[in-house]
Amino acid sequence: MSPANGDLIERELVLAASRAEVWAALTTPEGLAAWWSPRGAEVDLRPGGKVLFHFSAEHHSQDATVVAVEREERFVITWRPFESEPDADQAGDLTTTVEFRLSDHPDGTMLRLRETGFAALPGTLGTRTFTENTSGWDTTVLPRLQRYLEMGVRV
Image (tube, rainbow, N blue to C red; front, side, top):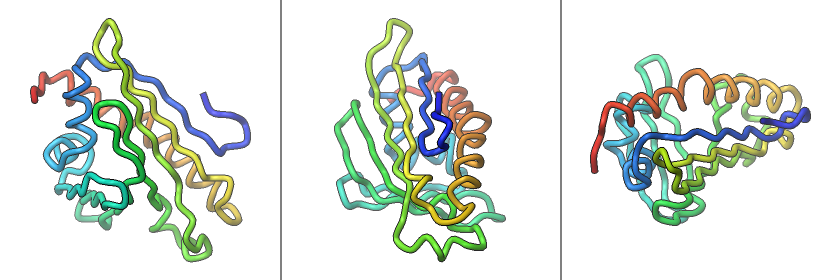
């Protein structure tokens, strides 16, 4: 659940896959391209490294900076999911932070997602981005991840 102030998106999802399989889906170019970034992805998996998501022809690529890498446990990036918004330039260097945490679960792997930093964004940019990202995680991104892993991908 997310608090009323609109600064935190939190989700928990049990995935019928091993931690190694979920980790690969979140942190490798092949994994990301299979469920999130259909035109490919580039990953420099180290703190300070870059992740580049290539979406559809209608959308520009999205880049992120790797903050933390704890193999099969925790992966953290910062990004500017609002970059295509008309007032994105008002945000300066501000980003949101996305954290993925993995833990064992009797049915596979528990994925805990947290995205924060919306309240620091200027004007209505934070509210709009919070609303869009909440919808995106719930209706597109996490369901795609779940479907991809249910297809039986093996690492």
